[in-house]
Image (cartoon, rainbow, N blue to C red; front, side):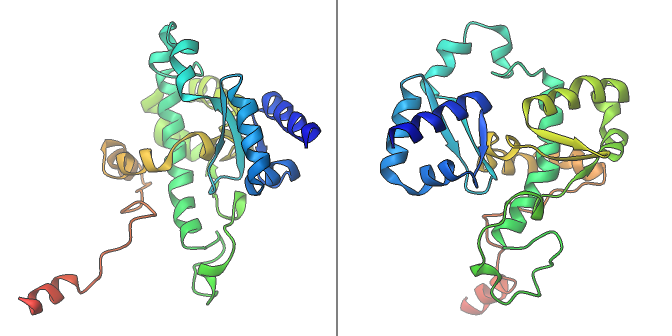
Length: 235
């Protein structure tokens, strides 16, 4: 186990993220003793393993008590601990909302992009899907048409914003489309962001741009259609 722990730790440090399907990552997720030792090795150097079961990758990040000692003395930390500018963060959140919000709905409902959920009687019992089976892509041209004028201009968004997000692993750009990158869903906290986007100003901005967010987060059950009628009957 010692060699495997060292190997996985080194690969995480070198790559920052690894797919959940990786054999050593899978062992870390199911073998408690292995995970405890891995967590201890990472904690010794101020890091922690970030694991979101809905994300296709795991990642390493600074331990919570290391944020201030590592980044607290720099001006950039006020906005981002990876050096993102405010407009890069704004675009990141927009892309996260357009890709991850609908993706999480599909995952919770055990649906895939090509499935409306009506063809599988046992959909709720199927394994949780990851990656492009449930995560849609965005047209880069459409994204630029809808938001470039807010963030600057087309060339700036392409050259300074999208390129930086791709470099950091938040997105992948292929054939004029933007796909979820390995860090998009694992480093941004759905439970923290979803309601703020859906019920906040950004939700209104997205709706005005033709991209209305879901009416509620994926973990909030819909209200019964006859709830009001039942209440009146009980009265």
